[in-house]
Image 1 (cartoon, each protein chain N blue to C red):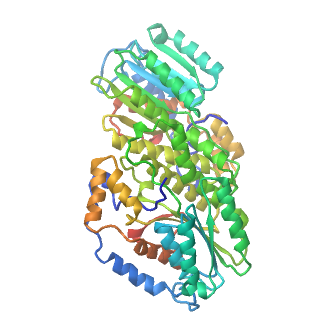
Image 2 (cartoon, rainbow over the protein chains, first blue to last red):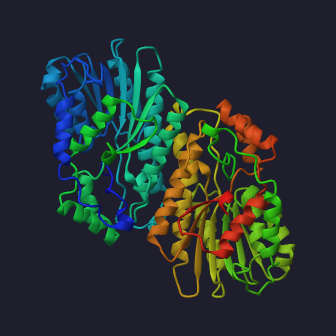
Image 3 (cartoon, each protein chain N blue to C red):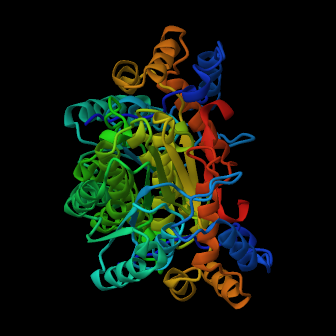
Length: 311
Length: 311
C-alpha cells in the first residue's frame, strides 16, 4: 500500500478533460507567500495576520514522504521555540532522516523538539502510540494544538467498481483512510480537551475526489468523501475547534506517477499525463505554502472544503 | 444493530431548524401517483411513460422492514408476469411473512416469483447467497435487472465524533454500510453483464446526510456520503447502467423513533420531535411512490442525488 496525498486534478477531468493551463506563476506566488510568512522558528513579531502559528504541538500523519514531509518542514519554520512536532509514519528510515534534518535546522537549534513515531495508523496500537508520544511531549506552555490528518492511500486505480467484489479489500481501505483518522482525531481531542489559552486546529488533507467522481478511482473518491463528511460533522459539533478540509491540488508526488501509469480509464489517465507534460502539477512546497497561509490567517469557515486554487 | 432507511429531515435541520410545514397533500399526491401507475402485475398497456417496470429480476436488501418492505410491495405491483423478486434481510420471520403476502397477492397469483434470502449483508457469505439465489431465479425472459441497495444501519447517534475512539466499531459500521453495497453491486453486475435486451438499474437509498453534516450523526453521514460517491463513480464508469441515488426523506419508521429519542444533540433531536409532532414525516408508501415514478419515467440523470421532495 502506498502512502499518498493530494488529488487527481484541478477541475472535473472526468467530464471536461484536463484543467485549463494553470497559473504559470503558481510556484513564484507560493514562494512569495512562504518568504512573507516564514520566520525561522525565532520570529516573535506580529503583523496584520499572525506571522507564526504559536507554541505548537503539531501531529502529522504520513509525515515521512510527499506532502506530509513538506508540511513538517514548513510548520517547523513557523512555530515559536518550545514547540513540538510529532511525526508519524510507517517508514522509520524516512522519518528519522526528517527528524535529523529538522533537529539540525535553525528551528531545531532554537528549541524545536521533533518526535518521530514509527506506527501503522491502520491499527489501534499505532494510534495509541502517536497519542502517547503527543501526551508525553505536551507541556503547559503549548498554546496551539494542530493535528494534520494526512496519511492516506490511493487504492487500486487500475480497476473499475464492478471488480471490487472482495469486502476485505474495501474494508481495509476504509479502515486506513476513514476509521483511522476518525479515531486518531477523537483520541487526540480526548487527550487535549478544550481549555483557556489552547487553540485547537484539525486539518484534513482532502481532495477534489471528495466532491467529484472520477472513473477508476472509486476507493479514493469514496474514502475522501467519507472523511471530509466526518470532519464537517466534527466542525458542527465542536464550535471551539478550527477544522480545515484542505485540498492540496495535483501534486508532483509518487501518487501522480501512479495516476499517470495505472489509472484504468484512458481519458482520466491521459488527463494526468497531460497535466504532467504541460507542467501543471504543483510542488508540495507551493501547495503547502497555501495551507500555511490559511492556518496563519485563520479566517476560513470551520469545516469548509478549501482548494489550493481558491487560496 | 438496527436496520433503517431514509434520512433525518427535510432541509438542514442542523442550522435552520425543522423544515417548513410540509405539503399537506403529500400522501394524497403520492396516492394519485400510485394509482396512476400501479397495474397489478398484469398490466401490459403502455402510456407516455411506461406503466410497468418490465419483466424484472429485482433484488432488494433490507427488505424485511420499513422502506425496503414497502419497495418490495410497490415493485410487485408494477412488474410483468414472469418477474422475480429476491428479497434479502437478516430477519427470517419478517421476510417469510412478506414472501407469503406477495405470493398470495394478485401479482403472485399472476406469476410473480418471490425468493427470500436470509442473509447478513455484512458478510461475504451473505452477499454470495443473494447472488446465487438471483442467478438461479434469472431466466432469458427477464428484461430488467433492478438492484435496490437499501440495507443500512443508523449507527450510534447518542454520541459525538470525539467519542469514536474504537476503530473496530467504525470499521464494522463502514463494512455494513459501504463495503457491503459496493461488493454486492459489483457481484451482481458481474453475474448479469450488459447484453442486448437487458436494462440494468441500480438504486442506492441515500439521504440528505450524504450531503449535509448533522451533529451526533457522524457514522450515518460518513457512510451515506461514502456510499453515494461510490455510486456516482459507478455511474461515470458504466454509461449503460441507470444509477439512482434516491433520498426518501424523513420516513415514519423505527429510525425516526431512534432519531427522536437517542440523538445526543438537543437541537437536532428537537427538530425530529417537531417533525413528528407536526405530522411532517412521510409514510414509506408516499416516498416509495416517488421512487416508482422515477423508475417508470426513467429520465433522471444517472448518478444524480434525487430527493423525494424534488420528484
